[in-house]
Length: 170
Image 1 (cartoon, helix red, strand yellow):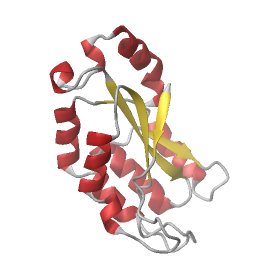
Image 2 (cartoon, rainbow, N blue to C red):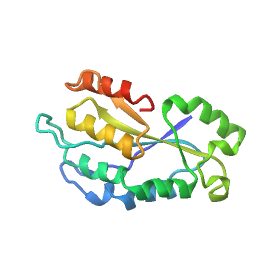
Image 3 (cartoon, one colour):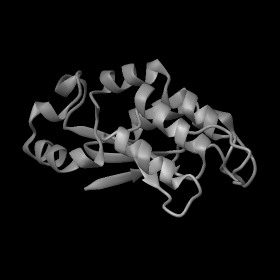
């Protein structure tokens, strides 16, 4: 019942970073024009540069983090009537959306858009480095991240597991 929504990614050509693709306007456009009735997962990659990590997509994570913690994003989510959920909340959200109950919608509710909309912002690569872990937690605490995908065999995975235990909605 979850539709994957990619597109919030700063490297569309290998090794070429386009900061506009991970800016506020790019994410706002995805939320305004590509999220329809139902539940969507928006994939993202918040983090801080960590010299111990060798990765193709690395320095691009900090601009994503800035966008994901931008206060305008929360305001837009409310304006659009979107509900932020985690995967733990998915069964209840799906049931509410199917029943058409207003509680499944965000504060702007049904007046903003027809139908129900829920969004999971999933941070990828949790555990790959301490810098990524720090960015994921910051985007969760100060931004919109409601889920993270753990790379279980990565060097900072034990730290990520500990952080996830301390942030149960993540």
